[in-house]
Length: 484
Ligand SMILES: Cc1cc2nc3c(=O)[nH]c(=O)nc-3n(C[C@H](O)[C@H](O)[C@H](O)COP(=O)(O)OP(=O)(O)OC[C@H]3O[C@@H](n4cnc5c(N)ncnc54)[C@H](O)[C@@H]3O)c2cc1C
Image (cartoon, rainbow, N blue to C red; front, side, top):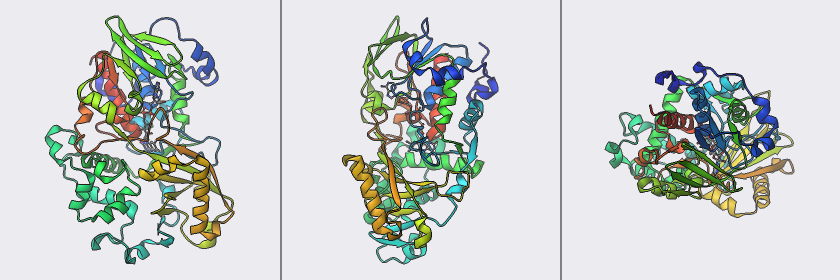
């Protein structure tokens, strides 16, 4: 097979793809489930999230036959849109930066329309901070006697401070070497890093632990992973400030990509066991079906892989990571307002709260960017776990009640629709993966092939994050399978 490694890793569209078989995927899911095509695939792909779909596409471009086994009755994994709600609110993947070469390429190939949404986030007054029942603008927060931040950071809002300090005080000369064992000594906890920047425990609690970007609290989060994230964000910003999302819902992207795969995508096939023998690798599913192929690419989050029996067992850091890698708890509710109560009370529509309500984020995803189509109310870390312990209806009621308490103008106007918890999702066990202090070198060992089994997924990315990282990891796994 003619193979140009550089072209391959830059993106797939340049290589072209033949006729599409879209209708078959969109209309015939039950038929697809019932009929694995005759003959063994060259590669079995476990999971139909973006990394599994990208792996399948690249392998087919190289003339290989693939079968994808997906536990859910849908494709997309952590790309999930509420297609029946106003503005198509995203429960998962939100947007890609202008520098997402792979993501943008995939969207073009899939024929979905990307729209700029970055500017929409900046419309209207910035969110206010609520400490207890008191709403504050940035200026009021800077003067607030209970503000625990050091003098020079008093006017930084709680949700901004950690990102700002990591961005200003990175220790790596080259962020792309964040997982290099030579830098392992720098991998202290985010807590220790923030202490070193002069933050008190009270300041760290407020700025990080109430709504951590990664993890549960700053003690359990790797500072080098934060630098990796920061380096990636800066690189993306250098490419442009745009944020792109799929018009009509991001979920359209994996659906369109799946339509282009020629091999079978078998939904509702939860993988329970993987057995490697000389004759091939056999994958056993919960419905009793089994599939054998010379090679397997496994894109399962490690939080899901820990429920799969693998024989021979993984060992060393790989086994440790499967058992222990952290996945961020995030829970969300989608709410709408009957009328714009924020115009009535004159306060910003967005709310960052230090209490049970979490973070209330306006969505402007309609035709008119000025129109607020709804709000995502989000809890991260411990607050998400706390919400998850309640009945979902009770969480929705609590959210409405708390908004009405804080904003009397909202009384009777707010309705909570959907509650969604990533931690409770059986096939994810959390939002994105995160590393604990000292685990920065894990990623290199975690990604190693085990026999004829190769691994991809966002948790294995080393130079990109999020959706782009998931696609990067797929390219590495496919190159391994191809032996190049
Ligand atoms: C709330 C949220 C917001 C996000 N925002 C952004 C953003 O703005 N920008 C960005 O770049 N990224 C964002 N991301 C991250 C991005 O969505 C992920 O990095 C990416 O979608 C992960 O793809 P993946 O293929 O690695 O994993 P997944 O999408 O999780 O795919 C894995 C697949 O494996 C399947 N599976 C699991 N167990 C089994 C089993 N036993 N048998 C068979 N199949 C199984 C799952 O059902 C799933 O379909 C966000 C994620 C979340 C949750």
